[in-house]
Image 1: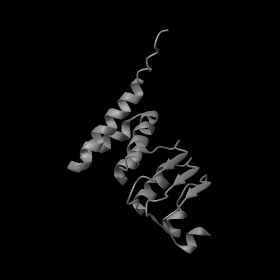
Image 2: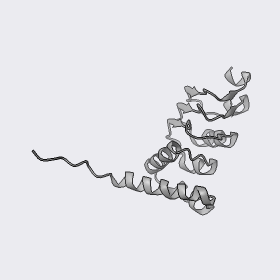
Image 3: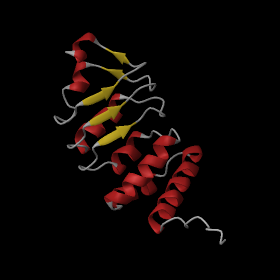
Image 4: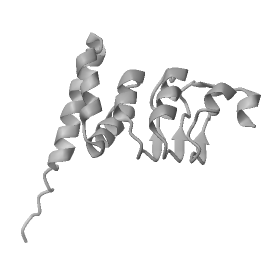
Length: 139
């Protein structure tokens, strides 16, 4: 019987992984504005892959996140990222008009009414476990 070897990674998966690993290297050396701004020009399907890889590793630069978001993002999970700030929420509000699900659990984010007013209208599910949420934001 012939042994079946696993399929090699696709070009998109390989490219996304390479971009994410290079950005993780910048994390320790301080982000280079030029490299982060280049993410804006990536096609949306590649932005999605890079964003998912970085967020799973806890990379949470607001500027980079903003450059990796686009209008067709429907779900965003920031639960592995510490230090989610109002700047992150503003980037999400400005870039993700189609967002339906947002996970902020475990991020320690402080969510106030001023942040909720700007979130996309299509947003239906928000996970806020272990976040600081003001009473007014829940209404």
